[in-house]
Image (cartoon, rainbow, N blue to C red; front, side):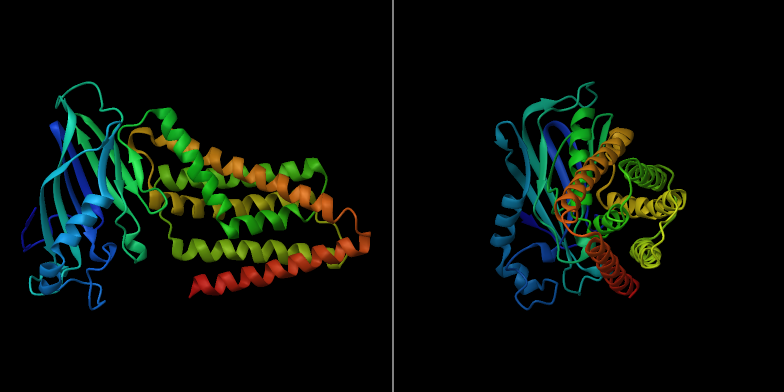
Length: 355
């Protein structure tokens, strides 16, 4: 393993390339120094020359452990490694903030540069992510002859296959879509507001359909149509959809009036358009599979819908078990209390995201 000093950035931070040729896989990747444990002695978020000199073996060990290319036989050997400590803004005298790694992995079988077949059974793994939000994603452009792929690794998805089949892409993105819903508290709260507002089964099905169509449209538009939007205004607006829907439901119920179903459908559809942009923002951070853009988008959408159906069934079951046993006046008070709580929580989220 060699170490060279950098006069200029060889690779943009959190970016990399992986070129498969012959019996070798050649990796160039830029990693944040905060991704390494026990190297930054003074805790300033950068490495001095002294820290690099003392902790060289630890850096090498962590690279061998957390940066891997594997196949069915296990991890492929990493050899001919060169480390290029990279200071910020190409200032050689400043402390190092990025480490550019140039490494070669030995493949079990030699690949033809222009072969028609893509390599099978190869996986890339990285467990080296920094502490900052911008350092929670590692993008690697993979090339093998005329075949190309963009890998986007995250702490939630640290390992991905090279050149997967379309069905594998769909399955992976279904899981991602489900996880985004089941861990998205604002999305879940909005669903709870509109579903626990009550109505017949046909009305609830219509509300779910309006929500599905609305966010599916803007999710696809935001990803495939390159619509300019920013999470800086999308996330606070999502919080306001919760406040708005809950406040209207609360006001109408307090006045003992039923909300017109057509108005509810239109309002849910409009709010869903905003939620779809939020989903697109989340999926942008992960990235669509470049070779299967439509399939990965369909898989993500399918995962979102499966999770929504599961949540809707759970909410319906909870409402049936708990509310149906209470007197009508108590049921009404419970719904009002829930709606008031949603207004408060949504308002706090709005302020937090705005600031």
